[in-house]
Amino acid sequence: MTDHRRSDRTLVVLCVLLALAVATLLGMLTRDFLLPRLASPPAPAAVSSAPAPSPTTTAPASPTPQAASSAPGEVPSPAEVAAAVEPGLAQAPGVVSAEFRDLATGRVLYSRSADEPVAPASAVKILTGAAVVDALGAETTLPTRVVALPPDEGGAVELVLVGGGDVLLGTGASDPSRVDGRAGLRTLAQRTLAGLAERGITGRVTVSTDLRLFEDEDPLNPAWSDGMVESGNIAPVQPLATYGGRAAPGTGQDRLADPAASAARAFQAELDALAEAESETGEGGVEVAVREQIPATDAPRERVLAAEPVAEVRSAPVGQQVEYLLAHSENQVAETLAHAAAAAAGRPATHAGAAVLLEQEAARLGVDTAGMDVVDASGLAAANRLSAAQLVGVVTGLSADPARTIVLDALPRPGEDSTLGERFPVAPARDAVAAKTGTLDQTVSLTGTVTTTTGRVLAFSVVSSEVDWEIAPARAAIDDAVAAVAAL
Image (cartoon, rainbow, N blue to C red; front, top):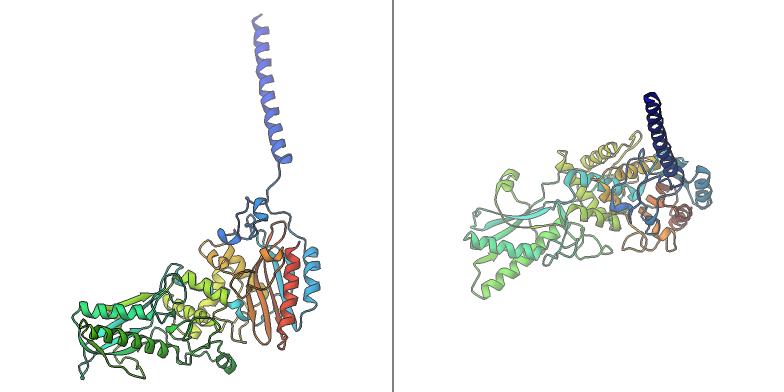
């Protein structure tokens, strides 16, 4: 009897264990086959709102609100991408190189002469933004300072205006609501008089400048054509300027032949006006010796840097300046920030030093730099050589690095105040493209990301070279190709 009971209990235990195993198996089958399989986590509202993963991990988020509510779909096949891209590119003048790559998988979906180094125009600015953020930090602000040196033989105190790399100074009061004009020369003049009063300094003062943060023998890059300067695309690269090398705000304004000298005269004029106003009320004790040509200081650089500033103003954060330069393709800001970044990285603050920094940044982003030759930070030089594959590699590397996704956030988008503002006016491309434009007399390019209707984010670069001034047809062909991919 005992043996029978033991046998019954054993049988019951075995049945229970078998039932549990079956239930577990059914649960696993139900989860795998009845619930949807997600290729990636649910996507946030924009690719710029969170760092996209590396090409070997799950897919990044879609920048389109429509796609944000569901997981990205299947990756388009190379045949589908080719069918979408080629009709548009067939209409492009010159020679076309292009690459489209799925960001989540790293798979190249379309390639056309993508390894051929070309002059990509302002697409270089994406790499510039990455290098600047990496070297300076997105939250860093750039100072413009005034240092007071002891009286000269004539008894005048020398006020040295020290350029710290801010070329978006305003001529009036500091405006915290703007990137250009965040730091104002009128505010700096007011603080200078206050600082002199605190130190008990009265009498005659003179204004001089110190621009030695940058070390170029020629502030104009020898790789730039004379036409680039004459057309106002660029001015001498100096660490002191107003409104991106202009006398007034607005990217359509003409640039100045000597931006630093103009900024120094604007500061001197504000200081003189404020000093006279104080003198009339009996409160002031400073007289500005106004000079038409404001000289560079003769004081050693070390002495200027060691002196306690009388006053200073600070630029908008570097991250906001990068957003500004990408949105407006602001050449002066790109070159100046690249110089400042080179100095911060321990390299010469020169055109060549900045170019080396950019190539090193590309390597840090995982790009094969063979054949790459960067000669400026703005893309104005026709001698720049980067391939479409390398530009796509830069975008891919940025998407994989949380510290640098701020650069992808800053890429121009259709409908915004940017160089892409009036392009891609129709959905789905209107909500799917984020890209840096590029235009030279022989080059039209577009580099960035495009999101398909199913939520796949593709990094891409299309460069039409040797266009011989056929800019509008080249731009239309590129836009047609990218828009067709957005519709996949």
